[in-house]
Amino acid sequence: EQDNPNSKDGGHKNQPIARINAIQTEDSKVYVPRGPEVFKATFDLDLHVAEAWEHWRAMGAPRWIMAPMVDQSELAFRMMGRKYDCDLCYTPMLHSKLFAGSHKYRKEYLTSIPEDRPLAVQFCANNPDTLLSAAKHVTHMCDAVDINFGCPQDIARRGRYGAFLMDDPHRVHDLILTLKEGLGGFPVWAKMRVFDDTQATVDFALMVQRAGASVVAVHGRTRKQKGHLAGAADWDKVAAVKQALSIPVICNGGVTTLEEAEQCLRESGCDAVMSANGLLQLPSLFSGKAVEPFDAAKEYIEYAVQYKANHRMVRPHIFNILIPLIKHRPDLMARLGQITTRRDGSLEPFLNFLEDVRGEVSCLAEACAQQKALEEGTLELVNVEDPP
Image (cartoon, rainbow, N blue to C red; front, side, top):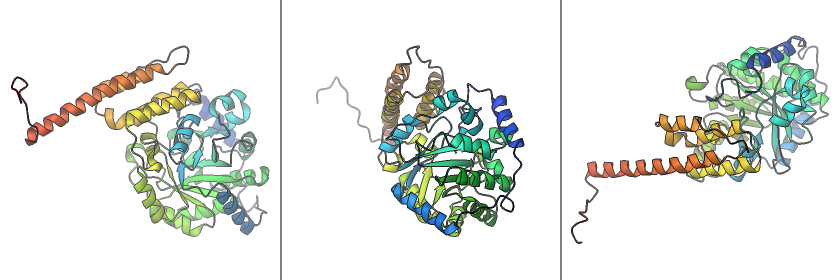
């Protein structure tokens, strides 16, 4: 999962953060984990593995995957990503308790169309019964239900979900097996992080497989590695998981170009590569096409209009796509932050911003290039008053 600097509350601005945490935390308290010694898996593991691979191949054996991103892997961005060779996309992380109990939440936070496939719907959860109730609402519109064991943010710590459940393996086991049994064999996936210790990482992943996960996505960073402290992703640990498991494994972390994605496939030995931040800045990443940032931002707005993206999602997308050009221009970042959308829902103010800034940045880049040429003595000045 990506670290979203624009969203301190995890993106749920219409839900008070304290309420979300209280809902998730209370939900965890009403379920006492049983673990594999009490809640025993009864399915045949060899058959489970065979079915996992059959399903993976039925989806076209995806290689390039869009990660689940809070308020950022919405329908509009997923469809743009699919144009640029994303083989499979995840939805943003959804809160299972809210999703199970609120039609309004379901309608606002999850939209899709028939062309939006293959698709994995991701939930955070800490109560298996609640998770199963939520998942039953989505099996008709997706190819897998994924459980988030990877979110490292403070909201996940306070709500007792995400990467912080990796300290509670019995609960993790129960979440997966409850879905495996309750959804009648519908594919259940899991997304996790690595531990400091490679063997602990492998052991956790093996438990996830035995509990009934059909695919495991592994982020090659620990939960302490986030934000400015993210550091490099450890593909060697992910490779160890791939070597130990019998089901498809996805490698996540440290991929910002197509070349890095191909390198990740080779070094990790995984079946697919997932990107979050890389796609946010370069939606065409997996295609290898160099799309100019202003053109990419304008194209995203066109998708946002077509698929009626919530306006709270638009601004962060434009910010992320343009960040290579405006990161040293606090005035431009401030202008982007001050844009207000019109009552009719038009995104025209964002388009106007793009055109204005494109002109400013182009003029500035041209001036810098001329200044550099002058300093290097490679620019020939012509006196316009003298005839040639």
